[in-house]
Length: 392
Image (cartoon, rainbow, N blue to C red; front, side):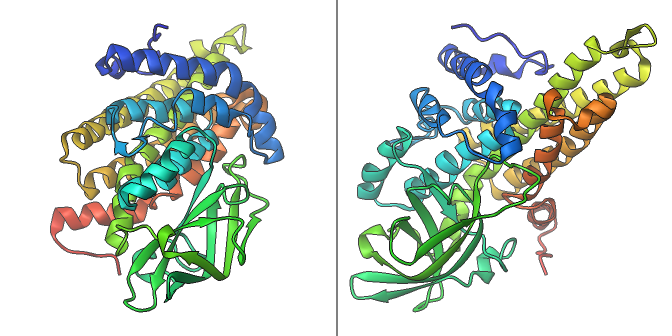
């Protein structure tokens, strides 16, 4: 299967992929266009998750690309980025779903788990047999998770007892396992635990009335004397620095998904403006509409260049926190501008789901905030530039 170049990849960054990667990406694009895109507006409106896509994504190895059983990164980070872009281009919620399953839940096990834990959980998660969630954020702890976690873990013989609350946890209403991050009451260090969601004392409640990423099933989690055996403690998660290793690997892919979300809005706007006739001709032939489209493709191209380079640096082993932080902050800020311009190009139809732009417009707000707000990522970069930490 050949990969047709995206017109929205104005400088042709996809040409950097290997032939094998292009073939894999073409298959993913075809599946998303044919099987996922037709159903997302309906699920977005109803705030439901299309569970039927899990098997299709698994069959295409989408969950396996990042974490091939016990070994990470059999594929280039640039390729994985383009997968995130394709997902975001069709639907940001679907991109978030894969990011939670592959990047966060599987990533946590791969980066901080033991060999035995990786061998036990990752193959089944890659096959879509087990859905995972990632429980870090709390009702009163988001940006300050490094210090502000209130969920506790207390050792009791060969078991750990978890107590606390989590909020905004994607997948948590239907996940089979949730990786819970909690502070060890003995040393006050953050530890990670694989928590089967049928464990006594674990309760997840869907967050209702969201107006962004409505397909993602975010939940509030309550942990009441949840007992977890030592064998389910992530054996290499001994402090928040280990948690941060997972976030470092996923933050850049959120930036890629943001570029994809921008492209989805841009492609819908371009299609619409070529077809919509006013004053006797397509509105795409008017100067002001072309200005909106050119500003949009400029943002997309600039952001794409940044995320490609960040992923190359990851492949080369030289990416640092500030590199992925700058990419996430920049790409999501430019995405916000782009989806607004695309909505503007559609006039009143820009707020109707039928034309797709409205969904990309609304979903941009969540991408802008999660995996580190613009402000927090800015401070990470500012610390690298100046040598001064200005977080408080």
